[in-house]
Length: 240
Image: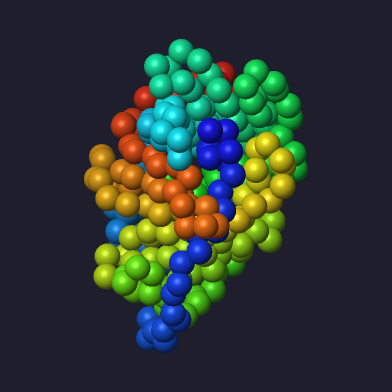
């Protein structure tokens, strides 16, 4: 189960590149518009997301993501009954720790860089990317499973590259492809995740299902959204 939570591989799917007349600015505006009003997103000071995760062996767990502006982030993986904490990642904006099945360690520099980027994008997504140190490039369109996507290549200030697949019809960012640190091996590994079934909560659109695949096109884990709560008064103490 621990591998399926953090170790993600590239999902090998065939796609063809297409020429597109849209501009990068048009795609960005479409993605932002699909999320909801910018002022509504900016009004979120803290957020708690609760998901139910199932791995390839049908093991289930609860995944709790807690964010507080401007740069605090916590991920906790708990047993399905909520009694046992399996994995906890805590980033306070400067330093961070990983606790894996009772063993605690400091985050590596690569992990700190990754969590710094997460705090920028967790709620805001593509909003103000360039102002936050990202460089963006519009790639040729791609067809994935019969759907046409505008593809943006994003490079953060740590030179980490992601590809964002924006549905050409809806503007929704449905696929993210990139590299992240495996919490067990501490190696950087490729991943591809699919964000499905949008649900509007407090005026903002979120995926209610997340599916991750391995390099052999097999599902490694599936996340189903239970609840999102905004501005609940999250305190700093849970990030230390």
